[in-house]
Amino acid sequence: MLCRPLPLAALCLAFSPFTASADVSTAFGDPHLKHLPLTAAQKAKRAAALRWTEDFTTPETFEALPGGISTQLAPSDRPPFSTPAPKLSAEARLDFSLGEALFEKLWVVGPSSTISSDGLGPLYNARACSACHQQDGRGMPPKDAMDPTPGLVLRLSVPGAEENAPFRPHPIYGAQLQDRAITGHAAEGKLQLRHTTTPVLLAEGEVVELRRPEYEITQLSHGAPGEALMTSPRIAPQMIGLGLLEAIPEADILALADPEDRDGDGISGKAQKVWSREYDQWMLGRFGHKAGNPTLRQQSADAANGDIGLSSPLFPAAWGDCTDAQTACRTERDGNSPSQDNVELGAQALDLLTHYTANLAVPARRSPNAPEVLRGKALFYDTGCAACHNPKFVTHPLDGDPTRSFQLIWPYSDLLLHDMGEGLADHRPEGLATGREWRTPPLWGIGLTRQVSGREAYLHDGRARSLLEAILWHGGEAEAARNRVQQMTRSDRNDLISFVSSL
Image (cartoon, rainbow, N blue to C red):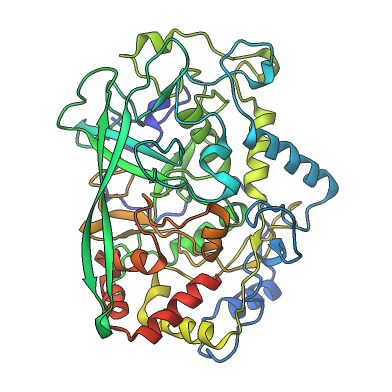
């Protein structure tokens, strides 16, 4: 029996019943987009634009505009990741501002005098979207036990009882550890983080120290979770360019998949397959560290429900991630309101929030024509990094959506799942993703991480404190590329990092 995620089965979403061997070769379509067929001229233009360069002496045409016309070029008084796409209409710009207000809203326990802000908890990780995505950047792992920043969450599951449902939410603690609670309730637990270190010797005698995070759950509200518990720490991803990723034709992503490695290059990208609550069908997974959601609207609603405890048309459970075993949580008063479609985040509010997340501009490249950047770009291709971090796509021609329509974009991701080796494995399956597989993260804007977030933290759990550390953690399908970087001269490594930092 398939555990299809239905609207009233809130805990089923991230737990696809299919095993990692399921076939995803069949296209599901892009029902979330009003896309138009390509004309003959567009097909020719697209083919020319997507052809990989062989000339690394000069930047490619439009390479400095990673988001197409949604690239932020002009100086702004906003943080680098918080600028609206510059070509938005006046009406779309107003909706962006309204969505931004929802993104930054501090939610409160309902019912209260501020009805539009009701809905927090009962258990939660943050009171606002912006609490984890500060300045629309990536979340940061805690610096120490006293760090209150909610930039990292711990996903939970246990083995399932059926062959076609090999994993499910924890029966008591649910799909995610909530480390905060409203008055009268106890948080599920607290996450303690410590590190062990391993030195890595590079060519020319340079040594880089890699930190492996180790997590412990303390102050558990309902007792020990049992030895079968599977956990996965996740930092919040950066927010730029998400609407452009959503507009990439599904067929172009599937064309890059090679799950059986039939070409023998050692790279076997696999497409994720997830259930769309909105369209009531299977779709390509695009969003999340394991591509667990198909659309921005579902991703936004999922995060609002799991992280803040907000009900919405897609996730109508007002108790968020509380399980049947957490009876006090399930019977707590809620903020459902007739003015919000009898949920806490109504359809219009969810649309505005989604509009905001879809229209954050991608910053322009920095110094793409610098000699060291161009040398680093050649190394990026030659080393094999581009095999997963696919440089560019062309978005669908879209009806009524000019800022995302038929744009050449440079996310440096294939949005596919890849085996990243034992070092990065969380041993927790999600959908078709095994415990060793992760979605290739887009690299655009990565060089601005410190400016936006105050420090650097890369990979799914933020363990890497520098881009070089992140590269050296690569294993599995990326091990050969990682070894080439380890064997580079210091000068070549610096050039490679200069290129990635320019994205």
